[in-house]
Amino acid sequence: MRYRHSVAQSAEYLRLAVKRMTQQEAGLHPASYALWYEYVAGLNPNLQSEIDALLSTNARLDDETTYALYSRYVSEFDSNTALRIGDSVGHLVEQVAESAALAGDQASRFGSSLENWAAAVLRPAATSEPPANNGVADILRGTRQMQEAISTLQARLEDSARETQQLRLEVARAREEALIDALTGLSNRKGFDLALAACLAHVRPETPGPCLLMIDLDHFKRLNDSLGHVFGDRVLANLGQVLRANVKGKDTAARYGGEEFAVILPETPRGGAVGLAEALRARVAASRIKRSGDKEALIGNITVSIGVADYIAEESATDLVSRADRALYAAKMQGRNRVVLAQRPTAESRVRDQTDLQRGV
Image (tube, rainbow, N blue to C red; front, side, top):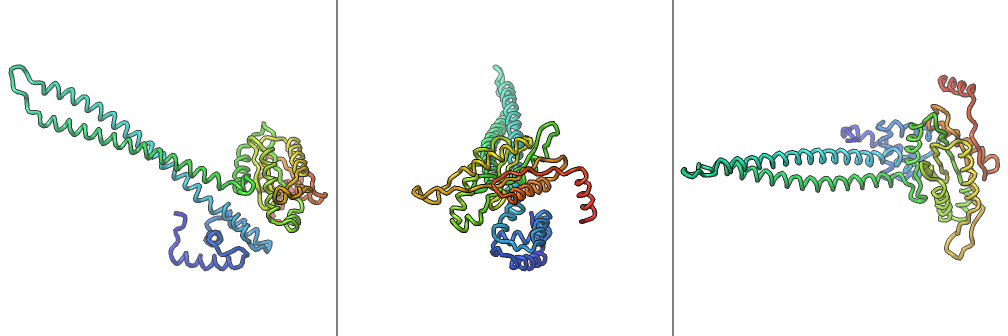
């Protein structure tokens, strides 16, 4: 059970959570309450760290941020736990089924041996009366009943195994869908975090990469304000189509948040990453999107800025994203609609950063 608090404890956490909720811009809905309950109860250190970082900038959490945090740090518990429970139940059913099958085989062999023995013992001699056979007949009858019971058990276990496998597939499918952004069809932020963590956990020195692209639509707020949010959604969906068409294999394209996207390239060198980024930038710039209906004029002049960072040995996921983000910011400052490759820190700067970190600067 995730929550084991007493009535008094949970009442206090309720008071603290509601106080926090009323200080934000998000609605007072269950997702918001679950988020702040976990925060004030100290159940989720990663969630606390991210919320504290947001609050340190005097930001107030709106619905989009609240749901994003809920999806990333709270709701994943249910799907992951359900998947583990499904696996455990599946293994248990398989083990019991194997035991039942073994017991059935043993009972069958015992029954055959008993029937052969009974046939020999109860066969009447030519000159004598047949011996009493009530006890043997009872044993044979009990053995057959046991065989029938085991056969019934095996059939039920087979049905349970099929149902368990179906449930496991449904949970796995639901978990996969929970990692997908509905508008673009790409991985969502939670999917991105998991993919990047897995990528960095399997870095091999003998292979190139990985590299990370951070992509942002230029002047998206202005576009939303002038042409409406419906058209803005079309632009986001169109960028998702471009990324899905050009990011294949082991690579992962994700909607990082809002109008920002990311591409993880596990085995691509920096030159190849920059080449792909340029190709994506050009395809978006050349695209035309209809505002609404077939008779409307096509809208163009939609561009993206892209920051590219190649992985440095022992670099954390946060640092890699930060370097790609800084390169993206540089692309914006240089006029947008361009690609900028992040600088690799020198040995001197890395020592300085480490010293600053130790000093708490």
